[in-house]
Image 1 (tube, rainbow, N blue to C red):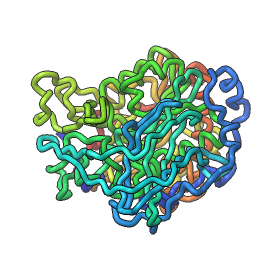
Image 2: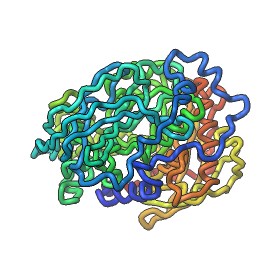
Image 3: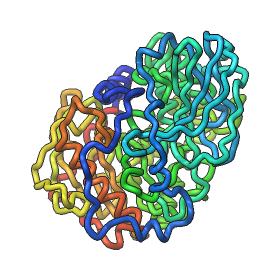
Image 4: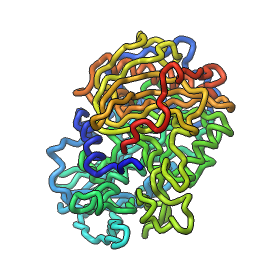
Length: 530
């Protein structure tokens, strides 16, 4: 059995990505730098016209942009200066939610911004609270058996989202002392028919959340052995590398959102929660797009993607690496159902091991019921941390049209900090095309990163970028790792991909052709270092 990923390794891999961003808070830089040309003959107009009513992306992004959503890192102050969370991670338009805020200041305001393109401003102001009395709230509990930390705060504001357009939102908290933090929220679409669905990987955000001292990677002493076995949404976000409270929105979602809306793609918005609780919302979707780090999946979440692919011809795109690696269950907190992410990461200590072993929360690829993630993603997660060049293997694939890439074209720094590879095991789907073949060394061992594309009989096509830096390259983040050429390559390839995906089952016009024999896909799971 391969070694389990330690807290240090997991956080190191994130640090390699996050430290390269131009800032989380001020972070989010626009996806607009550098023009992109829509592929000739593949514009989304036809797909948009046929789609059911939803977000008018062009009209929405014609609204005045407002950069005041950004937070200067100098305005953060102490962790308890101001922070908050919501009783619902995702709401439908018009659905109210409660905002829980704690601050050491006398008062605060909360302002909601919808994140998009907006002429390069990346956000627009939607709502602002009245000046509200500040309360320093400290009530919390820790479950001794699972090390789950939950806040027991009183709600500060109830927010009505009537008129809010579906999308990813940041609620900016500003105290009367000038201290600032975010609370993220998704207003999810009530229909995805005819749409390209952008899915926020909030289970992964929560897995890395260390508020109260515990995450799924470490305990209060920083040790992996003292990690939590379940983490709650009933607390603010405080990721070690994202202290602004956005979860992992800036490094893994913002560039994707801004890019898609800049190019007027027919988008809809959902989260992991809807994959779990509302599979019917994905019926009729043209494509489902996973963000840059979407690691934690339940059985129902996997089934929702599998059924969309196989029963409805819905295309799938994984714009990162390490997707669907961890097996989770959902549980209930004092604020409601499906607000607890359960992941023991070890079969021997999960209470369900004896009664329902198929839903015990060891990694998906492991016994007693191994279901490797590549059955969905195509490629299989390998190792971290790594920082390597992305090397094109199949430049004639339609996804790379117009990029100017040839076989062997190299983009230094585009691979990392985690990567995937196509491997020759029973769950590898066929036909599958290896698109990149990037030599690297990870934890002292030689390997290759590979992007992959496969198709299935329903007509659906599936793309796996196989590197976490793909999504952040859609914006002007990760600037210390790669330059303009890599960014232009990723933006053009992604535009080709999502434009075609928006038209329907892409395998009908772009069937995959096996090239793994020529590529020399390794037999077995490859490196397999978590």
